[in-house]
Length: 383
Image 1 (spheres, rainbow, N blue to C red):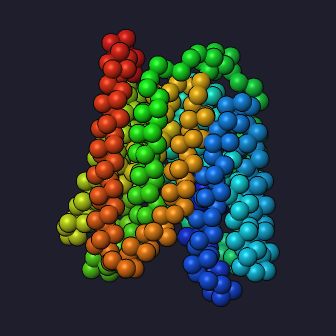
Image 2: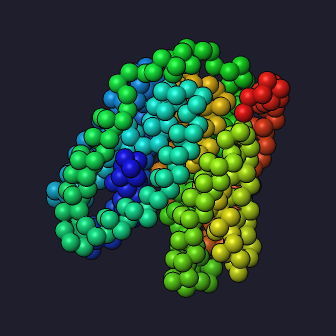
Image 3: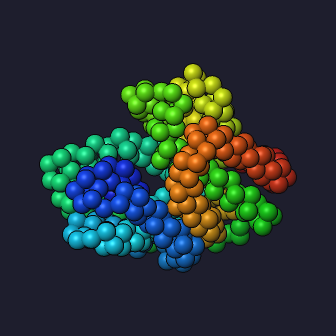
């Protein structure tokens, strides 16, 4: 619940808020949407430092700080008298995103539960798959009744009244003894340099594709000849597909090494995008396949680094991976918009499909790099 509310009040907020803000103020639409990119950039730049903090002091303090920080950013949005103040408010929201979204929560779970954190991470991503289905209608209702400024204030109260108490009550003040013992064990003996950079490159490409599709899918489908209603209907299939994939992962994926989930994810994302690019008549099938791959990606984002590097360095690894990933996400709307404006939807979809194919190759190289440790793990009977 806390993650659903936090994501809805930060990463996903501008999707609903932008239109009423532009209509009410006359501010530049590019700058209003670009403010989210600034927040993501701030979050990415801070990610390594945040990872070190979680490793040293645990995630409770950061998670507790994230709710009032996000709330402060929303209060500043509600009273912003000018566009520069509006954009500056998103800097504060970026600080809250750095302290309170998936990476910090996953690192906290890894520190608390060690190698047993996979189940908790999977269940969190399963439930939070309903984020946009819950928060977008909620924000839209608040805007309709209170205006966009009032909606920001109301959502700030929601963060303080719901998210803060959840973290205060649910995140332990001290690490369990079992987690402390697990964290004291040395990291797995893997070639961390090569494995780390392959993993980072794969996660970055996956994040770029996810962001581009989230921002541009409707317009890309329309440019392929579909009506707005048809494009919206097809895009709506992504959410259920993601949740369905996570249910399958919860039920059947626990015994397999997360690298195989990663391989399945990138293969399905590539297949879905290639289907959309080369056969617009199969757009429904392509979106469903893409959605399944994207849904698995959110789980892999938390479970694969834990499996590869162990709980001792998990928080630090997540922070280091998050920086290039989030910076790339921040730049994606700008680059994607440029591609579509100057080269058209076909080229944009082709580039995204090409990146997805490259990601399949990266995961293949990653599997090759860790084949020996996987074989040892299987011989010992480890999942």
